[in-house]
Structure formats: structure tokens, C-alpha cells
Length: 522
Image (cartoon, rainbow, N blue to C red; front, top):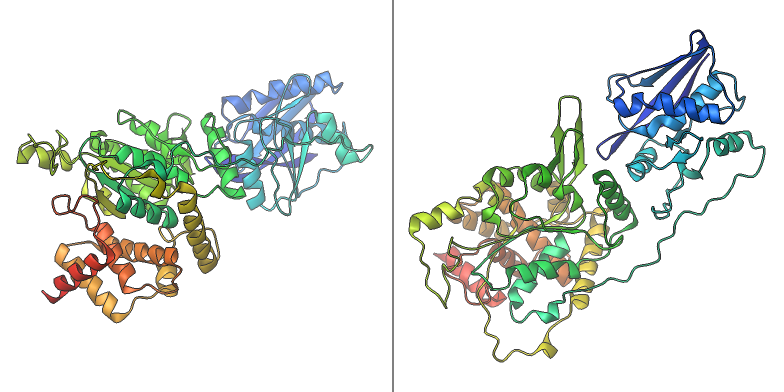
């Protein structure tokens, strides 16, 4: 008799149902596993056989055939050990209990019958929810925080016998309390009130945080680019429960530890990082920095020092918020929804446009240096900032706004966006059809935007990004529609020339309006 037991297979962070079909019959003692198993799955027959023998279930003179369906999908990892063991017990008439079709079983086996945690367990739990399983049996892991999934019962186990007893209902199931992580207070190591000057740059970063927009900063060495980027995380709201689970699962799959559960991740790879470490990959594809920054911040300092090939590989995650890694045996997709912050010098020596030092670079050197960042990458960036060194004279820390105050405004603006779109999505990534349906431009605003974009030679993608920025600015102000001031400020945020900016980098709202109205009249 063939028995089918449900388990979960993983392709990156995406899961699919694996039916473990087991048939036990008389014959020469052997266990055969088919269905494209990798080495770790093939070795499961030895683990399962030893575990069952230690529990008193002998497979002498029994031939066991195990089929992992769907047969065309590559199976990897010890995730299916528990399901295989239950299938053998049921098919071999060792147990009489019915295995429910709406239940799933995941976990690796020790030789004594202990069920052990596996890599990617949280990803499997999220996949089980999407696959509409009603119950999921999984190993108890004290390092994983408590997970609550609506409409699905999570049953934590330590031994195979625990599952058998639960299915039979012979005795109360031993309760295992999952680890409960206490509420974390947001730890702010760097605060906006510690940054002197750069008020307009802070305003731009607030807009970027509120709408999840991408930012590129350029300026001479020591002007504050890295400091602003490192402080950016302090104005981001804590992660939601769903985002926390996604973060845990990605870090589990990568085999990397994280410092905080509720705080958005902040990844800062060095410019010598390889394309594989940045994007992800390997023989068995693992998440890269773009995926480890999911729901957080990816900061690339000295952007022009990254190899051109590596930077161009950022096109897909910046546009689609996911990265697909193809290999001969499998293709995996990891989420990569992050706020991209980049910083670079305006030229090789760094002092082009500086008021304090002369630039020693030739025109050819400057052009070659700036061309290291390709047009398609620049086209995907929402906010362009040029910074200048700040004169410390006359500044007072007492008058400067804290990160907590800015974060409260960011959080309020995001709540308006979530309510408008009916889901946890911001203006920077929502479908443009939804954005323009809820926030249409007036005819005058459309004419203004089109005329400026034609004059500046901006692409359609940049025009859409300007509208997204304007919508975020309106959300920060609490306005239901996009006003002219919001649109003009958004235009200025996207169109920045370092040679024509005042020290603080961005014109005031009144100066913006005057400048662009004169442009249109001209």
C-alpha cells in the first residue's frame, strides 16, 4: 500500500508542496529514493532507517520505495526526513493512525529518533501558510522566536513518537513553549540631532524613508555623506510581524546572524565585494547583500569604486524588488525590497565644485569616473543630492530635531499610504496604475512635468519617479492631493547639479517655484 505524506520544498524563499509517497513491500532489505534528490536527501534513508530501528521498528526483509513528487523539481536538504519516517511507519503497518491530508511535516532526524531543526524552517512555515495547510508539525528550536500564523496550527515536536502520540490522541501532547522574544526598544546609535547643518539633505532623507525612495549623494570627502547614510536607519519605523518573519527566514537561509529582530536591516558591503556576495549565488544559491537588506537599507559607499559589472547587476533588484539566480539544476528567487542609499565623490580627487580645495582632475578623468555608474542605474534612482562641507560656526545642537521626531512623521506618512493602497506598500514601489488612480495630476501639473522633462531629456521612468516623490511629499504634509509645491519640490530633488547648488544642496520651496515657473515661461 502506498502512503502520501505532505512536506515542504524550498526554492530560495519560495515554497511548494512535496508529496512524499512511500511504498513498503517484502523483498531484499533496501531503501530507494527517487524524485531528483540531492546528496543530503539520499542520505536521509540511512538516518530514517537508524531512527526507526532505535524506536523498535525493524525493516528486515522490507523493500522501501520513496518518491518525492513533483518528480521534476530538484529536492535538497534534510527537510523531508520526518515525512519519510511517517510514510514508512504507515505503509509498513507499524502504526494505524491516519495521517491527515491537510497537515505538513518538516524536520531532520537524528539516529535516536529526535527531530532536529533545519535550515530555512521559517521560510517553510511561510510557504505552508501560502499553500493553505491547516497543521504543520515542525521541530522545536529555542533560537527561533514565537511564530503565530493565522488559520494554521503549528505543532512543535522533539521526537517521532510525539507525532505518533498526537495523531493517535492516546495522551496529551507535550506542550513546548516556543521562544518569546521580548519587545525591543529601538536603539539609536546615531541621531539626526548630532548632524550639524545639511537640513535640506535631512529633509530629502525623510522623504526617502517615508516613501521608500532611492538616494544618491555626491560631494567632496568629509562633507557628511557616510554619516547621513549611517544615520538614515534611525528614522525608519520598526518592522511589522510579517517583515520580521521574512527577515529571519532570509538570514537563516544565508547562515548569517542578525542583531535585532524588529529593526530594519542595514547592510553596508565594501566596494571590493564580488557580484555573488552582493546579488547572491553559489553552487547552492544563497541570498546576497541585496536580499539580506530586504525591508531595510542597502548602503553602497564609494559607488564609483564598485566594478561596472557588479553595479549593472543591481538593475533587476532595483526595478523588480527581487533577484532571480539561475543555475543548471535550479532557479531560485529571493526578495530584495530595500531602500537604496549610495554615495560617491564627484571626481577621482573628490574636490570638483569644492569651495575649499582645487580639483586636480582633467575633464577626461572626471567623465570617465562618473561614467562608471551607468545611465540605467542613475535612471532608477529617485533623489539626487549634492552636498557641500558645512561651516560649523553658529550652529547649536539644542535647536536640531531628533531622529525620533522625524521617525514619527515617517511612520504617519507610511500609515496614510498603507490605508490608501490597502496593503503594506509605499509610493516608491506601488504599481503606477494604483498611484495615478488615487493621486491624478491636474492638466497644468502634467504640462509642467512634461515640459521640464523634455527640456532636461529625462526618461519616462524619471517622470514616474517624480510623481512618486511628489505623492510622498504630500503624504508627509497630510495632503490628499498632490499640490504644485509638492511637484516642484519633487522635481528639484530629482534634478540636482552640483555646480549650481548653494551650500545646503536644495532650494527652498519658494525658490523652487520661482525657478521652474521662469523655466516654463522661457
